[in-house]
Length: 313
Length: 253
Image (cartoon, rainbow over all chains, first blue to last red; front, side, top):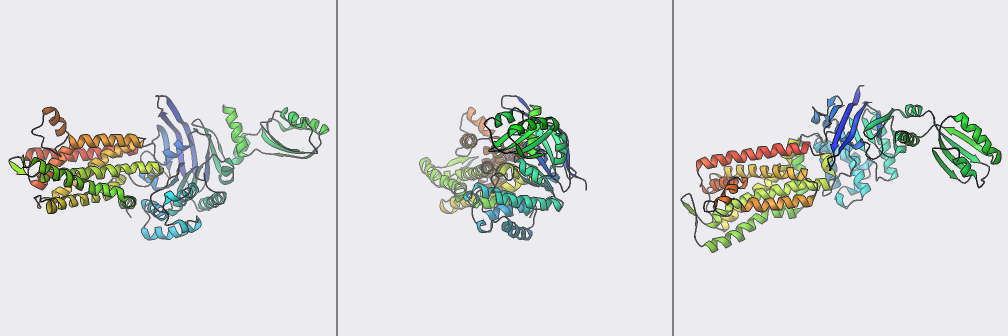
C-alpha cells in the first residue's frame, strides 16, 4: 500500500494583526502509509491545526507540497476532500437542527444516498448511544454530547482518511475509550487516521507513529520505539524506600532529575544522563535509607516530549 | 443526493427552524406595500408619470417592493454564515467534498424559492387587494429578474459575512447598505426630478437597475437602451459577486 498522506517541505506564513510575520509551518515533511494511525503532537501554536487546515484544503500552503491519497491539496482540492472525514478542534454541529438531521445531512453532503444514510444512521446512533437523542435539537445538548455527535458523523461515511484535531476533548472517558477502539478497528480495515492531541497518553496508546512539531518545525518523528531511541539518555526510575527521613527529598533533588515526584516512601524520577553514574549515587542514599524496590524503564511519550521541548528552548 | 441538492436540503431544514426569519422575508415587504404604498397613494392623491404613462403609487411601488424582497432574502441567507461560524461548523463545511461554487449555489437555491414566493405574495396583494394593474405576459421575465437579483445580493453579502469576524460589524454594514441602497435608488420615487448629486449614485446602484427592470416587466415602462444596459449590468453584478464570494470562501482561513 502507498502513502495516504504526503507532506513535503511545507511552509505557511501568516501576517498577524500588527503586520508581524508568523511562520506557522517552516519546512515540515512526513509521510503516512495507508492504514496507519499517526499522531501529530506539539504545544499550543506548534502548527498542528495549520497543518490540519492545509491537508483539509481550508487554507492554502505558501510553498512545498501536500497530498492526500495521491491528490494534491492545491491543484485537486475537491478530490482531496472526497478522501477525507475531518473533525476540527472546535465543536462543530448544526445547533438549530436535530441530532438526526446533523448525521443525515453530513452523510448527504458527502454524497451518501438517502437509503444508505438511514442504514448508517441506525448503526452509528446505537454505537454512540444517540438513539434517544435523535429528535432533540442539538443546541439543547451538553458540550460532551455535541462532541460525540461530531465524532459520530465521521462514521456515517467511508472516506479513506480521517483527520481528528483534538477530537476527544470534552468526551467522557468511556466514550473516549469506545472512540479509540473504533479508530483502531478502522485502521485495521485500511483507513488512515491522523490525530492531533495534547493528551500524550492517548497518542501513546493509539498511534503507531508520531511527529512532534514545535514552532512550525518537525522536531522528531517515528514510532514510539524510535522516539525512545532518540532519547537514549532519558530514563525513568521508580524507587521504594524502607522508610522516609527528613532529608530524602533533598538528597533525591541533588541527583538533578528532569522530573521528581515523591509520595511517602516511593519516588518516581526521570533522568537525563548515564544510568551507571546514577547507580553509585543511589547506593550512597540506600546506606541511610534502604531501597526495597528499584526499577528502571524507558521514558513515556510525555517525558520524551518534555525533554525535547527543553532541548529546543 | 447531489452536492447542490444536499446544501439546498440543509438550508431548507435550517430556515424552517426559524419561522421568524421566514416571516421577515415574506411579510415585511408586504407591510411596506400595504402601509407605505397606501399612505403615499392617498397623500399624493394623483398619479406618477413615467415615460408618458401615469401610474398609481401602489403600481409604482410594487416593483420596488419586489426589489426589497430580493434584498431581504439575500441578507438573511448570508446571515446564515454567521450562524455557521457561531456553531463552529463553518470550517468543517469547507472540508466537505463540494466545491465552493456548489456550496454557494446550493445555499441560495432554497432561498430563491422563498424570494419567488414572497414576490408572488406581493404581486397578489398589489393586484387583488390594492387594485394595481400589471402585465401578466412578462411574469417569467419578472421571475428571472428576481432570481438574478436575489442571487447577486446574496453573493455580495456573503463576501462580507465570510470576511468579517464579528456579527455586530456585519449587522452594521448590512444596515447601512440596506438604507443607502433602498433610498438611493428608484425604489420609492422617480429619479428624473431629483438633483444630479442624487441621480449619479442612484444610477450606479444595482438596486436601481433591478427596480427599473422589474418596472418594465410589471408595468411595461422604460427605454430599450437603458433596460438593455441595466439588464447586462445586473447580470455582470451577479457574476462578479459570485466570483468574489467563491474567492472569499477559498480564503476563509
